[in-house]
Length: 421
Image (cartoon, rainbow, N blue to C red; front, side, top):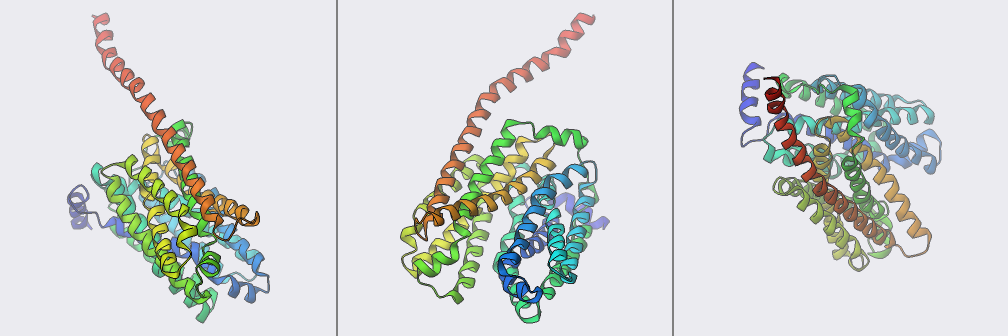
């Protein structure tokens, strides 16, 4: 372990990414798998527990509710704990939640277990993003966050399809036992790969972390996340009827197309992380603008099978190119106490999931056509651009004032010393 720590010190600030990011990615892979696999298992769960599919759909909502509540709550109550210990503990809670899901005797217990499984989700990504950026040089922070998120996007390519097949062939309970095993592997990786010299926490404590949420720039950043990813989920929540009713795909082909979305998301995530290290705000604006254009073109792209497949890939790329910039922007706005704000951003992602799906559903219910949720998403992307532009304006106005305060502060000790003498 001592040899590893010495190597880590040399690598973490150098040209290579530290191996500890692999541990974070493994945890993200498990979390991403358990979050999205329930969609594919709903018929199996409903049949086994003798409930309707709409009732089984509440299991998805229970997990999302756990994320929204757990992200800021767990980040706040663990503010003075070692971040290394927090990450391991959160993954332990994740394992317990998924194991209880596998053992749940009825729907009520499964709802509670899914809620418990969602509690550590946001805090893990929030605290993990802080740890990831602390282990690399400043010009590599966005890439470090994107590598942690890589586990989440790869889960959509490999984890969810494999876990769904496992559930369909071995029973849905086997899926959650398998996810629990991934969580145990993540715990081992976190314990071994995150060096103890990176386990420090902020001295701010709970009071300092809560103070970060009183900042207007932090709330504008969170608002950008809600609007930007709301744009994605407005369309993605209804991607299946678009592909089958508009593009003409058979229902059996949708799983493969969703894997293509994961490929696009993975590519966009890595590209966004690299570009954001050169220009954080430029990457954010570019990603949101690209998302707006892709969604606006959906009615045209969904007319043929080939262009629909391209649209699915481009949707994943454009949306997830903004993931790392959004996470890093929130952390920078709450630089003195980033853990809570970073975790709150994960809650914002899940609010975007629920809100985007609701807005897309309104467009469908209004009779605007099967591709209308994408146009609603394009409007949300415009809103995201507007909020991001407002945040940029606020930053520019605050910068001169902050500069004057630093100049005044730098002269105070000398003036006080002159008076003393």
